[in-house]
Structures are given as structure tokens and as C-alpha cells.
Picture 1 (spheres, one colour):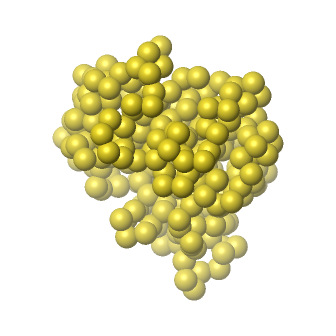
Picture 2 (cartoon, helix red, strand yellow):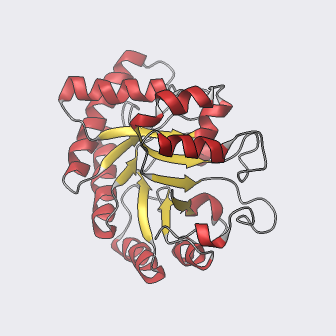
Length: 267
């Protein structure tokens, strides 16, 4: 299967503009990234530096997160958060602009936490509107908006693959926008108590992107209890032909010692 490495988590100790080259030096030819800028709408100089770093490294950026708010403060996305409508419109325009320049086709939209005092139904209705907006924007460049369940975020309402697929299907039913798909993160699902054998069998055929880390601890495959290699084989046998992104913590020493170098290049 085609592997990509998440530069934000595995090379997060480096400046943003040095991460793609570090991934290439480690043997990877495909990368993904969380939103690499502090601002929702970065300056032209920041965008140019990021685009140039990817191009100069000779790697392909296969997935990019939309801005997700103040992650360090516990925010997990803008999609369903009332009062952030203008910010979301700006986020979509900025993200698709970067993605178009680099040939990105997968865009992860974190759903957002439940807000104290806000009606959950109203938040979900806002999410439909915002995801439809994003779906129409990425469709223009042949892209897909990813919807992801998360763990370790008690106010984040999407915890299972079924939660995320309900959102995907709800947007399609309400707006006709079908440019959305499931981000199947085996680590988050396992931490939330999912039976991964069942998830791979039932939700795997609808996955638009896959991410992996072992559990517990979010370490590299082989450091925990998950049968990641087997699950990936089952996904492939079930028809999944997309990217598998490594989104584990680097740990001590060589974070890729578990993975033979000849398996790292996507081509």
C-alpha cells in the first residue's frame, strides 16, 4: 500500500519549511500535513515558503488539514462551531488555494467540539452547511473533504466511523454534495473502544483515507497491541487503494526503524 508520513507529528520539532526535506531524507516520497500556519489566512510569504519547501524536497503532499482552531488549547476544528462562520469561509479559501498549487486531493475538516450553551442540533446543521461549502470548493480541483472521528477530546462528538459516515451521508442527503469521505484512523478508533476487525470490514470499503499509529501510546506500529499490518492487508483485500499515512509519535531514536527503507517510497 502507498505510504505517506505526517510531517506535523513526526517532524514537528523542525521548522515547517524543513519538514518535507526531512521526510524525503528518511526515504518518503509522499507526505501529509496538519494546517502548517499559525493564522487561518497566512501571508503570501508564508505560503510561498511552504509551497517551495514541498516542491524543493521532491515529495507529494497528498493530504492537508483545514485550519482547526487553537489545537493547543483544546479546539478541534471550526466546522460546527457557531460564531466562526466567516473564519470557516476564509479557511476553505486559503486551504484550497494551497492545495491547488500543490496538487492536494484530500482535505481533512475536523468537526469541532460541542460548545457549552449551544444547541447540538444547531451545531450539526451548521456543520452540514460548512461541509457542503468545503465540498463544493474542493470539487473544483478534484478533491475530497475528509471527516474524522477523534479520541482524547471529550467534547468532540464524532467518536466512531459510523458517526463520521452519518455526517457524510447527511451532507449528501441535505445538499447533494457528495465530495466527502471517511478518514479511517485506526488509532483513534481503537482508543475509543472500537472493534477494529469489524470497523475494517464494515467501514473500510467507504474509507477515503487511512491513518495509523499503535495503541496505547500512539507509538509506531509494533509498539502496542494493534494488528496494524493485518488490518492494512484486510483493507487492501476489501478494495481500499488509497493512501496510508503514518501519524504516530516519533518516540526515542529512529522513528522509522520498524519500517524497511524500501517500503517508504510511494512510487
